[in-house]
Length: 273
Image (cartoon, rainbow, N blue to C red; front, side, top):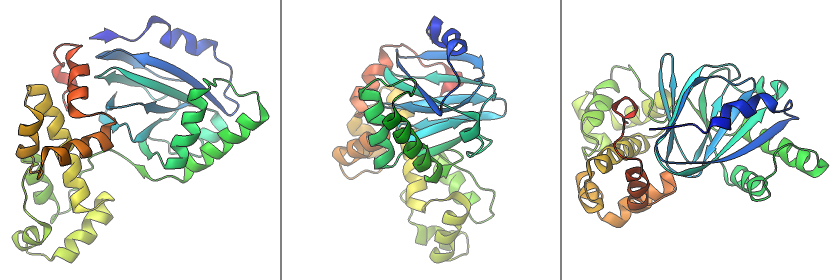
């Protein structure tokens, strides 16, 4: 494992108060580990591909590249990234941080949010002094505040009808059983289960199962399985369908993702997905 760059934490103390945001840009090597720490300000984390993992006192949060990861100010956490990536840290003023949740969450990157962040990144804007940049930052934050939030990438539920379904899919993400058959197994109806998935988990049955399959795919890549074998194992009609899903979720093809991981050697068990 690689420790975080020596200046990563030290330079935090030299930063001025965000007005209203401060951007920092980094390139992390595979298997970068960040010891337990906290930040004075709220932080929006953005990665170019793959996953970022935060270890908290009460568990772990995994966030793929299509989300921003919100960390409130002064919240202790450790972090780990598996692959080479570009990373953007966005510090948020206390006034704006108070408008976001007091707990860690995933925030969806809409096309507009991506475009605004890409523009800042291409110009390597850090502190905001230009009036137009300040307006752009205010628009960015307004869209972030309005964007869909999720507590975790693969949520759980103890609801009596859902729990056996979730447990079965976690045990075998390739399980092709449709929701209609699950309804028969748990003595319910397809419509009732569909409503419960949305109410309890904030997503459809198909979306939840797709996320479970993605996490299983990461585990199989770790084992060295071929893309073709993983696609077949997880029930995709063709390897190209699996590759398209993977690319959309993590911003890289499975083989590119695997190559970057292998540069760092073995994955530590404590960070296994």
